[in-house]
Image (cartoon, rainbow, N blue to C red; front, side, top):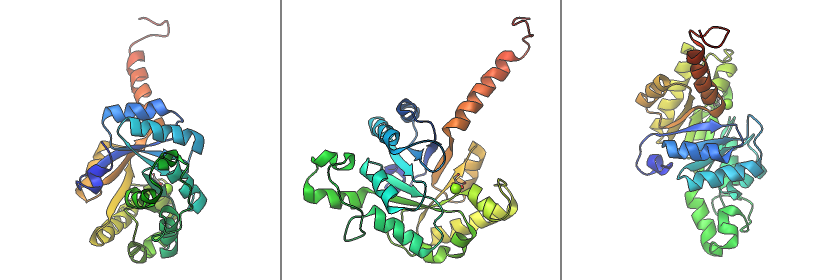
Length: 259
Ligand code: 3PY
Ligand code: MG
C-alpha cells in the first residue's frame, strides 16, 4: 500500500521510522503490509547513498518512501526528493516563514524554487519528458512538517495558512521537551497541546500525523482524527521482538542450559 490510501482515499496510513541502513528491511515492511517508511536522516546514521537504496526498495515493495531530513535546509530537501522520495518530512517548523521555506525547497516554479536537475533518480535519470517532469513532481511530491516546539504551537494558525503543506506532524517527544517535560509524552499537558494542534489543523482541512510506539496509542490518536501514524522505530521493534523471544526461551531454563 502507499500514502495514496491517505491522500486519495482519506484513510489512515501507517509506517515506521527507520534508522537501520538496510533495503531488505524496507522490503520486509512492504511485504508485511504497511503504507510507508520514514527513512530517518535526522536521528541516526543514515546518509543519502543508503537512503537512495532504501527508496528503491520501497518502490519495489509498493511502499511510499518518506525521508526525514535533519533540518529545514533547501539543499537537504532537494537531495531527498532527487533520489526519489515521495515525501519529505521536515523537523522543527516554528513559523510561517519556516513552512514557506519547506514549500519553496520542495516545489519547482511557479510554486517554489527547488533546484533543477533532471538526471537524477526522481526524473528517471532524464528519461521522463523534460516538460512533464516539473509538473508531475509538483503534483506528486508531498510535504510533511513537524510542529514540535512552543513557538510552532504559538504560530500554528499562521503555519496552517501556508499552501503546499500536506501533513502537520506533531512530534510528541520534542514537544514534551519544549514544555519542560522531556520524554513524558503521556503527560496531560503534552496531550492537551497535541489535541489543540490536531483540532486547529483539522479545522484548516489539513491531515495530521504523529508518532506512537504501541497499538493502543495509535487507536487513541486515530479516534481523535490523526491519519498519518508513524508507528515506532525499526530498532525498537526489533529489540522488543528479540527481548520477548529471549525472555520466553530462557524462562525455566537453568544456567546449565537445560533443566
Ligand atoms: C518527536 O517525537 O519529536 C519526533 O520527531 C517523532 O517521534
Ligand atoms: Mg522530533
